[in-house]
Amino acid sequence: MIIARSPLRISLGGGGTDLPSYYRLRGGFLLAMAIRAHVYVSVQRTLDPGLLLKYSRIERPAEVAAIEHPIIREALLELGLGAERALEVTSVADIPAGTGLGSSGSFATALICALLALDGRQAGPDRLAELACRIEIERLGEPVGKQDPYIAAFGGLTAFHFHPDGRVSAEPLALAAETLAELEARTLMFYTGRTRSAGAILAEQDRASRALDPAMLANLDRVKEIGLATREAFARGDLQHWGRLMREHWEAKKRRSSAMSNPDIDRWYDLALREGAVGGKLVGAGGGGFLLFLADDPPRLRRALAAEGLREVPVRLERQGTTLLAA
Image (cartoon, rainbow, N blue to C red; front, side, top):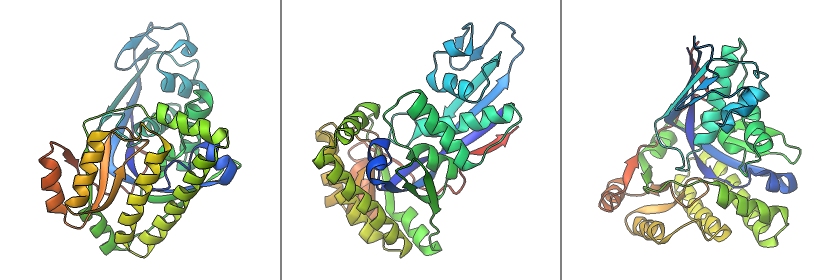
């Protein structure tokens, strides 16, 4: 049995500029952090000659091209494993999908890593991320950005430059030990209880960028500036400034789509600001998932949001990206 693992992530600044419809015009930039919550994928061949694929359900299609699971199907085709038979794929995650932590990109990179190992091959983080992006963006036509596969593959606290020609440059950011300790102590993340598909919100942004909508492009230009300023704030250990930038980032995100927030999220956000948060935002495309805050008074903020029924998930840096655990 082959087992691979990829971390989930939080986007710290610049999210949204990693969509091709924007970075091909202006170049994109963001800073993301892998966290100690993971997606695990195991792959093994079975002894059932009549079985083509088994995951949470069993499929018996005549060929790989007829597999219904889109990422598994396209990964097998992209990797030249179209003749593969009797394959069992198992996936488990520490946090549910649809919560804004990049689970699709984490699943794709772990799956590709495991399938390559099954075939006696391996790939570095650049290649894993590139293949995952090709599957989701090019083969499946999903209106998603590149950050999720890239931070899943690289791990750590990493800045990414998305060049107009499609290249991606990764820039690991090393924090001073005291800054990392402060970051983990003061960064609080709460589950809103709502899952959502990022597709609709990102498709709205994608259409507006392709149409050269001035307001959308200006919004994303500012978000990119916020991403660059966030990197500088982290480099000098100024988390207080990051908190203020995150608050501005959230206001910019809300202007991109009416579906970005809802009355409950707005109420919880306003409560957090009254109870010791410097700033915060929804992680991911919006509409649900996790609220992320930098707190001046973490215990006070925890009590306030716990009273609202929100569950906290600890934020801890995961230094490793996609990793082969067993082969």
